[in-house]
Length: 282
Image: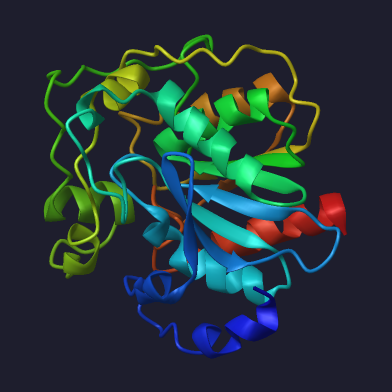
């Protein structure tokens, strides 16, 4: 699908940053155990952007990004990892690991024609990095990333109970941690779309079980730090350390919360990605 074919959808996204309905109208297809939602096919030689969501999230969280980058003339797609977004969870979901999700990202890259930058948010940064180790990518973008387990000084977190999927965060946590918004903000649109998460995925991140290594990726990268992120999960200096480890550019978006892709001023992070992309690829 080209950008022109998307124009009726792009003009109908609305002003509400918590309106994700565009995602339900975009074409999608299976890719391994995941599901790709296509914002726009690449129209030229510039790399497209493959967006990988974090814990509890699906492709829906990138609805605004897909409209934005399609309008900018770039290929873009978002991924439902196994058991997330529009993909139902089965009995095996509780044993899914971040390595499994990394395979989902690799399968998505295999299913997409052309050259792609892989973009991972929060926990989704880890499967994005794993896939970038397994497949040739044009670049890597990390948004408020979870740390690789072998990052010196990385912050571990208390584990969650094993065996059963972990229920999604509810309104108070969404407002405070995801959006840094008012305590009475209506976040039902987010609650309806969040899903339970595999405890193995969470514990892979919390117990620092995912090693990425310190070798360069052979591709440019960008790490965007959310200035309003919570320090219990993203202590000062951790995002910069991730960027330095891989030779990526780093920027702090001072007014952005953890879920910068659907925050009130989500355009700030989108513009930062677009500027970096134009600098790297024209």
